[in-house]
Image (tube, rainbow, N blue to C red; front, side, top):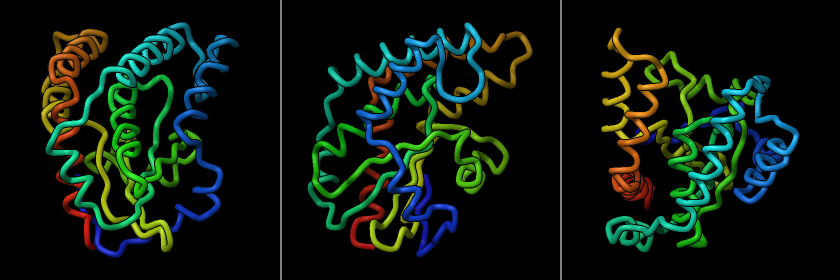
Length: 211
């Protein structure tokens, strides 16, 4: 997570915000594509369709089960400014499925945060301003914006710090296939129960409040 200081990303225009999806639209588009045996983006392989179907189940579960921590509720209650949370995502992304429902729970808690969703592969100019370690187009990516000026107040993602460290350590191993890396990462998410995501979002909100 990083806190920005009066930074304007020229690719994030009012038109981008107007055309962005809300969460319900993002979910409905995902469902409609699955009915056509497709997902977001250009890769409609069996594997990508399978990932997307699994992600729909994950999001439905997290929509129902996620409860905000006291720490995050306190951060939200102290928030003293409006924000747009612009999220780069894709329906096939497992990390996004584990995280975006938490964004929505935060937005539901306050009238000061509006979530907007855009697809990474349709907005690579924006994605390339927020690369993971300066090289990877990793999602989900949350960009916190001032609603009037579209200044970037902070950004977060693609994963909680502990999950990112786990992922990096697993990817460095020659004895693991990508499927096993993904399985171990999703087990971490299941065991963590969104606690790390919520803690880091609380820290981010506290950092931008009052800027």
